[in-house]
Amino acid sequence: MGAKIMDTACLNHFTPCQTCTLRISRDKLNFVLSDRVASGGVSMWCELEQENFFSEFQMEGVSAENSEIYLELTPENLSRALKTAQNARALKIKLTNKHFPCLTICIELLSMSSSSRVVTHDIPVKVIPRKLWMDLQEPTVPDADVSIYLPVLKTMKSVVEKMKNISNHLIIEASLNGELNLKIETGLVCVTTHFKDLGNPPLASENASQDRNSEQMAEVHIGIRKLLQFLAGQQVNPTKATCNIVKNKIVHFDLLHEDVSLQYFIPALS
Image 1 (cartoon, helix red, strand yellow):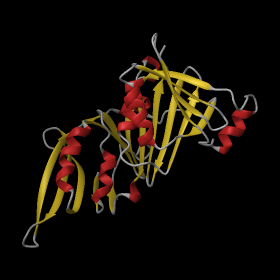
Image 2 (image 1 turned 90 degrees about the vertical axis):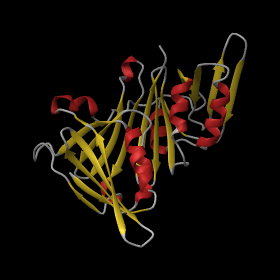
Image 3 (image 1 turned 120 degrees about the vertical axis):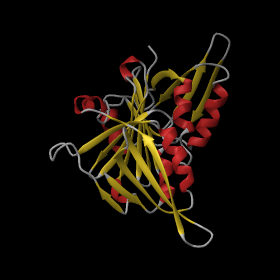
Image 4 (image 1 turned 60 degrees about the vertical axis):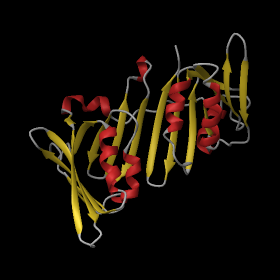
């Protein structure tokens, strides 16, 4: 695989906060975090259309039928390498073998004399065998009891950060009339923050409203740090942000920002 990126500002999207899988196909790149939701883990699916990020792109997968590559990497290593690319003229990413598999990043920098110099980083990766690919597919989204647009994420983060000082758990509840509540309950105190008139996605509302009272709340009880981990990763408010609640089972956040989409799944506490 070889790629040449001209716009290095977009690389901020390439640094999710945990160890993850990079899935490369002919038209898309995905960062995948696939902790088992069934056993209480968070999962994340970040998708980038390669044509929006790369001026040149060539890759060969395992075969013509399976034209994909799956790599396990530590995003912190990638982030550290890319920090040297802030003012780069161009940047290339290649999959190489230097006694072990690497993502080799070649950064072309301008020097004071207007000539360029190249800085190279070799990031160790693990090539994931085909028999494990099935565990790294896009998560299926169950039918939600309630789908609702999210408030400004910075505001939401500020509220949740204060709540974490009181409890480790949080209840998210929402209705089909555009109301979202964040609630904590302990033996000593009950605190609720209300967001009103947020709106509900049209299609989801129509499907759910057939057998649901618009004022009836659907709720899910989750770990507060898992929600903060999601909110802390959002540096800018997305173009579109929705929250889908499957009552007492899972909350699914679906964000779209320019050319990047992010899905984040937090399972309910048992």
